[in-house]
Image 1 (cartoon, rainbow, N blue to C red):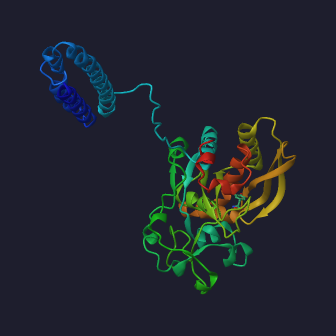
Image 2 (image 1 turned 45 degrees about the vertical axis):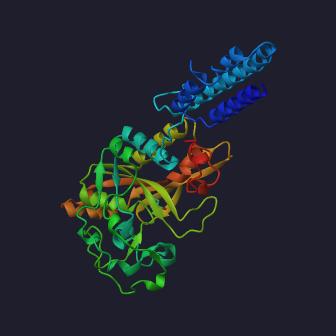
Length: 398
Ligand code: DAH
């Protein structure tokens, strides 16, 4: 009798131990046949009841039935657990209640966004978009813009000149055309990258002491004058006015968005690299009325029809007369300067003679506005450094 009870306990212990070691549905089925199948060891326990005699029958029965129930319950539990783990391993299974994985969708930087808004707006007013190189020669950055050697803007401390002074930089001399002009809507999608020559430059900004101090003769109509001119990162997009007039005859009506570089100390309103939107209109009989009305239309369209605009007399070597444009922002309770403008100086228009035209028959107007400043006002960005910090929490807002 005790032997039988011991045997029952031995089978029970072994059945539970082997069940605990089961990990897969297949192993579970093997276990089931071995212990719970029609000839399984647990099912067979009933035979111990049959074999027992007299009152022993009851004692054995009282032991066999709970063991049977216990092992069956353990089996059911294991079956559920294995089903659950199998489901998650099944690749075809989609749990529609699971939170999804959001795809990371990129977006344009706020400066690109504003640049596109601006070029789209000017496209509606009949402007095309032009681009020029960010690495420039002194001819396009200064000379052709009527900025004489003596002008303080040419101070080496106010410019990023390239190492080698333009004499050793390869590739730029091959540049065929100075400008790419395409329709506004097309370019506004691809951003403001200049397409001419800049990729091939390997140079870094250097201190003025490295510069070749010798006077240089310039070929005014070459693309980038690597033989005779120092190269620098352009300080203004006005350079592209020249490149446009070199490659296009009037009537000209272009806007030029792009990066410009100045060795300014970084603070809440200054970066050593920032963006400008340049405009150039050249034709016969262009007057200051065209200049003022276009700027007024632009400001009213972009900042709102009630926005006040002010033109302040100013000086730029490449315009005569010149003015600065301020916009009144009631929330700031002050005028904020957008940039400079003016009637293109006759000396600048002389570049049209390349086409055999008499430049005196033409007149034009131009402006150069700060895109970063426009973006900061439009979207209430308090610090210009936020534009280059690459904080996604900031960038995702636009
Ligand atoms: N190039 C000037 C600057 O960077 C801005 C400017 C002023 C551009 C007057 C113009 C202009 O086209 O007509 O400060």
